[in-house]
Every structure is written in structure tokens, then in C-alpha cells.
Length: 72
Image (cartoon, rainbow, N blue to C red; front, side, top):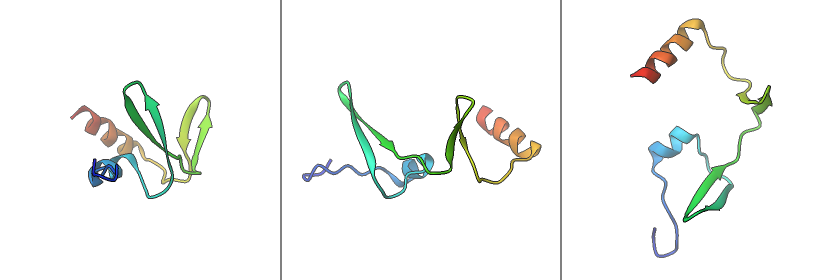
């Protein structure tokens, strides 16, 4: 944290979380602070799950590759 109280979030972490410039919510969480980003308009709740709409359709091969990547 610098003298002005600013904290830099590394680019790799911002990209991983999909963070873009804009408003965030800061929440006191026990002895820490939690930063929550606003969800994009293309996120909806469906059957109790958050679903991203408007993205490219995934093929069976895409899904298989994502599952394999998660196991590595």
C-alpha cells in the first residue's frame, strides 16, 4: 500500500478475475477487506446458478479440453 492508501492489483490477477476499470464494492470481512467487482449484464441466474449469456457455444471438444486442463 502506498502513502495515499492505494493498492495495486497485479495485471495477471485482474485478468484472471475479469476485472476492468470501474466501480467495485469494498467489504470489511473479519480482519480483512474483500473487493467485489460488479457483474456484467450478460450474467443471469438460472436454476440457482449464475450463467454467462451471449458467449460462444462450447463444443464437446472444448468441454473435454477444459476438464483436462482443470486436472493438470
